[in-house]
Image 1: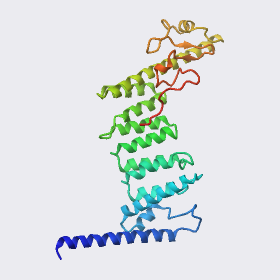
Image 2 (image 1 turned 90 degrees about the vertical axis):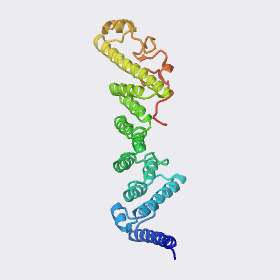
Image 3 (image 1 turned 45 degrees about the horizontal axis):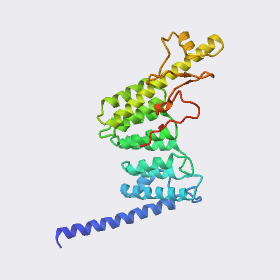
Length: 306
């Protein structure tokens, strides 16, 4: 028997033994579980215990538990289940066994974060899963993106979303939109100085025409948002001093010591409504603005979805 054939036979035997061992481990895990219904308990809940019981086949058992997680989610999602009690533990076991199984983090966060029946409704555990993934895979920019996405879409935590996107933007080979999303999160959080800095850096560090134009539009919206914020504060001060609202923008400007009528980035005067609201005259020209929009007006774009 030549050496090549001997190697093939040995490799085949190792594979068969590995599969047998993994089946034995899973069988033992289910045997050791405390009594309960299928919906309450399906496996040992401790990742550490499962890891010890894997007999060194961590990667193989991780793939099996990842398959279980996908099947569990798919079955309950298909049946519009009101809860996904086992999903987070399954994902935690999977990633504890194999911290570099990227797919478990990427799809796991999208399973965990949305509210039922779309998901488990556990965005905090999705955040913890992504943070564990970043801890073990710091050079994967997609994980920072997924973390920022959960912060934004499910928790409306703009500050942490901005931080996640910004950290991810510094990872080698990160997509340029990471800086774009970081800047947008800063804008949502009202941190105009930070947002302006990030958008200016985006404009200056890329040659892509579309990204540069996107940066320009966001910088215009930032200036409009900041103007409206300050003018609205001026209306409040005027009312507190006089007991009534200003009747015109000219009256407000005179009271605040502003030279001339305040204008938006297009040079159009801001509007002062009878009920004291500051509005953009042509809000359709500022698709990324978040202030100064007439009631019921919806910007064309307002969410970081690639």
